[in-house]
Length: 342
Image (cartoon, rainbow, N blue to C red; front, side, top):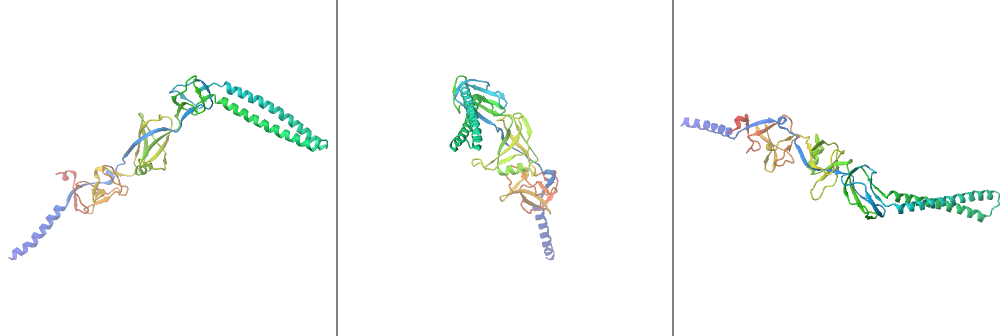
């Protein structure tokens, strides 16, 4: 009986040791510095021309002919088409003649005014005639100014007989046909600029934050790849997509309208998506801490997406094998990869 009583505590101690050994999980760990990645993110993007204009007629007349075809490269000021200018040139000549006449009247009134001033000093002119000469001079000066303005208007109309490229670019549409009658506003060409270009893309707010911290970024499209520099954000969230637009200025090496992808290398250290665990709605990674598993929550974690972990020190031990079924605070023992296989 005494032996039996002595065996009971011993059996209880052995049972406790066995239970503790069974609840301990064999795991494999690696340091955060070994596992950290800087994922590359890609979103659809397009090359946009800042200069895109429909060139229209600015005067009425018959179109004499187009000087360019679709696909032609043009520089600012290059001739695109001509409009019959005989009526405008006739109005210009008439305005020149009117200006000459107004100049003659102004000069005569000026001489008469100076004469009236001399007579007044000698008191040989009536007050009424003196005032008349003064008014005639002022009227002649004003009429000369109006004639000059009418000539400027006539010359502007003549200049509009030649339809010119508003900027350097490519002609992508042509509706101008020789012999057609045009009026102000009649569309003749569409010219798309090739020098002031931007890469544009839509990002959600989370992507925008990672783009701000990116260590590298670029655009791929049209068989070309090129780095991108500074960008600006259009501070309006699109209601249909809940995204904001970002724009990167680029030079003319890309073609307007090119579809491709905006990519960037995330600056923050991330952990691969396969190491992320979810417990009771919390997403994070299991780390080894004092012989136990602890779930470190990583804010904004999503399934299948690398998780940002800037708060983890480089020497943090991440549980990479044996984590399935782990619970917070569970005892673990560390082995190598071969030990953790069944």
